[in-house]
Length: 322
Image 1 (cartoon, one colour):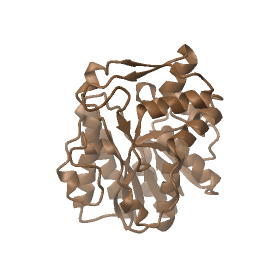
Image 2 (cartoon, helix red, strand yellow):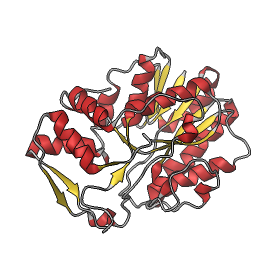
Image 3 (cartoon, one colour):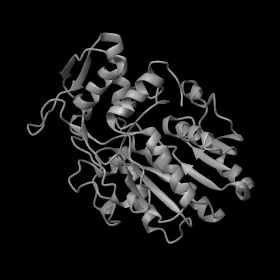
Image 4 (tube, helix red, strand yellow):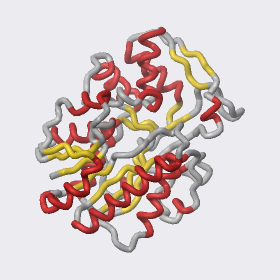
């Protein structure tokens, strides 16, 4: 059995789809299944079991001999939420219980960390130094919770025989339809262009960046899933890994790619960055991907233009799921 937590969410459901396409048939989905807006993400998935996240550890104790691997992707991901207690419970303590269960039962583990751990990027975006997480200053409770767990994992005497914490950068792709404000810029761009004919980007509030020239490392969810499968199949070189494309691109690049994929004439304007996130807004992220490449993962990452075209034409335009 392969277990995926956060299975009804964006990345978890895409990973289930990729596992299924690669011939893995004994798949177990773990999540809070009460949200109707996430239900379509699992419609085409062939599952051995669906386990409520609150029942997961009891279920695992009873089925541990059957479980080959755990992908722990479940988390609270709202970067605009500032209730630290929510993040501590779901992103730290629950993740610690998953880790300890993997140690107890001898199960390898891949879990979702985040590029939000890097904060404003003052210390760079390198995953080479295991001392760096202890010096990082994330910009919000979400990033803090992910960094807290990374720190905890690094200091544990007892670890799963293979484990990897993946610092996801800006992920986009199908099955994020339920995420609202937290969906990718590609998703919001498509909807804005479809509904209004134009796209509004955040104005820069720093003189060193022109409007729309803020840069992020955008990674297509299909690439992310491919890396997850690679790590599961190789199970070597435990540690923290960046997972981005390795190339920062501007929001203007993203918007223009979306207009092109939709066959629409460009109409881009700018609005102020919302006050509640303005002081916590990242202006540049770019994953240093040398550590992952050193493991033998050598596939090229999808370009922003190709990823946006696939997402827009094959999923957003048809409201299709992955």
